[in-house]
Image (cartoon, rainbow, N blue to C red; front, side, top):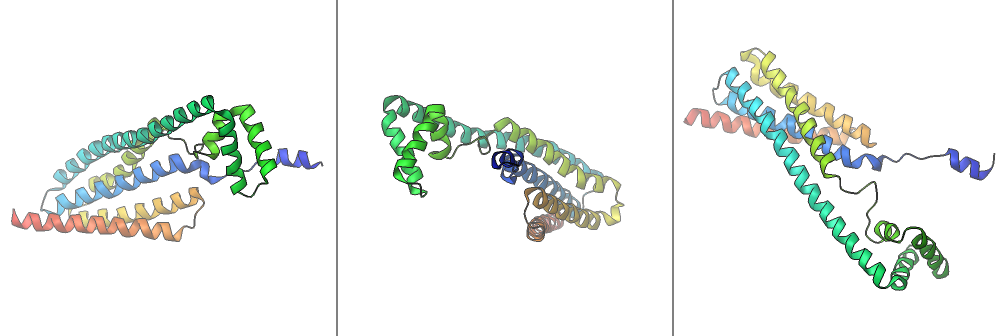
Amino acid sequence: MTRLHRTRRHQERHLIARIGWLRAAVLGANDGIISTASLILGVASAAGSQNGALIAGVAGLAAGAMSMAAGEYVSVSSQSDTEQADLTRERGELAKDPDLEKEELAQIYVRRGVGVELARQVAGQLMAKDALGAHAHDELGISDITTARPIQAALTSAATFSVGAALPLALCALSPEAWLLASISLGSLAFLALLGAIGAKVGGAAIIKPTLRVTFWGALAMGLTAGIGAVVGKVV
């Protein structure tokens, strides 16, 4: 088997390609569980009825999903606008002085350890094929993997928030009222731990640390909200 043939058969699949949708998915589901569970616990701790807590949770799901979608879309759109502005500026510089841009690209490769003459040859060949693409990747750090996708991020965040929020809502609807606080707290923490483990596994990271991290912050958020609800319930 020739070396070229082995190279063609060996196709690597790097986990960094998942970072865009994985970030939005984990953030959405995590926020859905924590915010909805905290809202339900706060209302229930304030001596509210189980039905009242359930209604508050449903309202939180709807509002949270829309908020996540809008927030992700605006945030990622801003990133996309910045990328497009940089590409437009780079396109103008390439049209104005391509030789200077070629040397600029070559110097990037020199700083990475490539010899000067070879770096200039590489820069010339890359620019002959796709000048803007070469500068976008090596000068601006923009690639197909990392490029901003506002609609994808918005839809992913809204969908995963809804799925995450549905879990404590289901616990609220199915649990006996006397066990409401305990079942939602323990169940939501279990869901958060599972989410942390799944996110770590999909992202190729170690499982223990992400799982403990998301569980700790979820417990803190729910504990504070339940405490505030109990205090407000006594005062009001």
